[in-house]
Length: 552
Ligand SMILES: *[C@@H]1O[C@H](CO)[C@@H](O)[C@H](O)[C@H]1NC(C)=O
Ligand SMILES: *[C@@H]1O[C@H](CO)[C@@H](O)[C@H](O)[C@H]1NC(C)=O
Ligand SMILES: *[C@@H]1O[C@H](CO)[C@@H](O)[C@H](O)[C@H]1NC(C)=O
Ligand SMILES: *[C@@H]1O[C@H](CO)[C@@H](O)[C@H](O)[C@H]1NC(C)=O
Ligand SMILES: *[C@@H]1O[C@H](CO)[C@@H](O)[C@H](O)[C@H]1NC(C)=O
Ligand SMILES: *[C@@H]1O[C@H](CO)[C@@H](O)[C@H](O)[C@H]1NC(C)=O
Ligand SMILES: *[C@@H]1O[C@H](CO)[C@@H](O)[C@H](O)[C@H]1NC(C)=O
Ligand SMILES: *[C@@H]1O[C@H](CO)[C@@H](O)[C@H](O)[C@H]1NC(C)=O
Ligand SMILES: *[C@@H]1O[C@H](CO)[C@@H](O)[C@H](O)[C@H]1NC(C)=O
Ligand SMILES: *[C@@H]1O[C@H](CO)[C@@H](O)[C@H](O)[C@H]1NC(C)=O
Ligand SMILES: [Cu+2]
Image (cartoon, protein in one colour):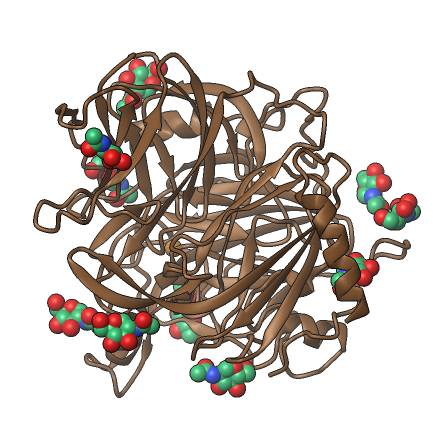
């Protein structure tokens, strides 16, 4: 208790404006039900402090965060700080049954971690069941006190959280799908900062409005917190300059459309150079799904002015298109003196993982089997205590460290349906010595159709050194890798019918989940974990678990 009071005192100092020396920031998150109205209907949703999206965390690089999560709902809960490297503090990563047991109803857990070497926009979200549909919010990491942005300081910053909305209870949607073995129902709409779109049938519901002054530069911190959707973000009549993705600065890149996969964040500079008017903001998922719209409103423009609308883009069902290729090619790390690229050039572990869908027998399901997903033909089985606890306390029988470096069978991954669509299952991890270097090629495989998968790695950012369509060619393709200024991210799409190569250095000891950020694919088992051993140095081992670590 005494410690807690001392912390509160420190935190009081932190609340003073512009306190550059501030190091500890404390947040209290109450997970509570809240009735929310959208699409003309009211339903109770799981929220943080009654807010959807949840409160924004604002901190500086190198700050310590102490976030107490109090579970006051009837679900088991965990909260993951998506993209935060959690250097040695895997206990705070918030991944159910990977780094901790869930916070059970009535229980609390204090997440204690430092924002080391990162600045930009990240977000937090639940990492258990489908609760992240409504349990999520922004993390804004400002540069250290006195350190400027590597681009002109914007007049103002705005957080824009994109998400998805189901009229039904989200847990009922996924539970129904698991019982039938079929694909879960699609969401009914997307949302922008919790607003669906202006609805004439419910005048009380308005779309998100971004009020701007003319002739200024704003920074939009855009987050795709949707469960299952890629979102194309646009504002009618305006261009953006991309300056940062996944809390890593990029070379400035001008475009009128950005694609943000589920789990990605993008900072955009927007110059309000049109002076007056109202302009549509849109977040479009793949074709035939509902677009979320909002309004960019120049201050002084009468409310009854007609909004300049966007010609809707109906993106194709995948990200293997010329538009996306352009966006992908243009995204490069800033690679300046202050923010250098440190892509590993010598590789210790060269891995090749196939990813895709499959089936597994299920006598009780509608068609006798159920949809699953895999990495290297292995559908992940969730353990019943966390992998990190098993690793740290050397508890046997929770996982095996024989995750294969290569798929068990070679075939024409993007051309031929595997004769047998079934997968294996298991709780297998890939073990990495401390500070070893990894190259991982992720290869999409065909199962009924080809699909784009946004893969997310916990505990690290990685460099995306190459990608292409078809099957990866280990002789020819590495010659084209970008080892100079590749983009650094924590989530990136493997193109539909193609491959993607990433590199990282395993300098963070612990157990780190890697999975597709399309939630239905995570549920189906497209996931695995890396165990990174401790090093021998003083700062090279996992810290001891906190006393209030939830128990199973
Ligand atoms: C939500 O609203 C319904 C009906 O309007 C009411 O019965 C229920 O108690 C409310 N729930 C909460 C958590 O406020
Ligand atoms: C947070 O963790 C650090 C170790 O990284 C420890 O020194 C500190 O006491 C912890 N703070 C709280 C409030 O638990
Ligand atoms: C899913 O969609 C089907 C068909 O529209 C509907 O009958 C069912 O009730 C929906 N399930 C849930 C959980 O909303
Ligand atoms: C114009 O719309 C904004 C938000 O959409 C609202 O806050 C404001 O009160 C409206 N102004 C008038 C005069 O109706
Ligand atoms: C891609 O970029 C090229 C070269 O800048 C341009 O000519 C082309 O129109 C772009 N294609 C799309 C779909 O944006
Ligand atoms: C995946 O594993 C299952 C079960 O062992 C096997 O039947 C199937 O042929 C394997 N598929 C591939 C593509 O390796
Ligand atoms: C990790 O390896 C690199 C390259 O071998 C070396 O320069 C660096 O000092 C090592 N870091 C640690 C913390 O051991
Ligand atoms: C992706 O969509 C484009 C445009 O609709 C189509 O031409 C292409 O064949 C699709 N690619 C895959 C792998 O499905
Ligand atoms: C270990 O970490 C402490 C605290 O962050 C730091 O003061 C010390 O210099 C580090 N030691 C090494 C060898 O990196
Ligand atoms: C909640 O978590 C505990 C500990 O893992 C587990 O025993 C219990 O079954 C979980 N409850 C639900 C509803 O999943
Ligand atoms: Cu996926």
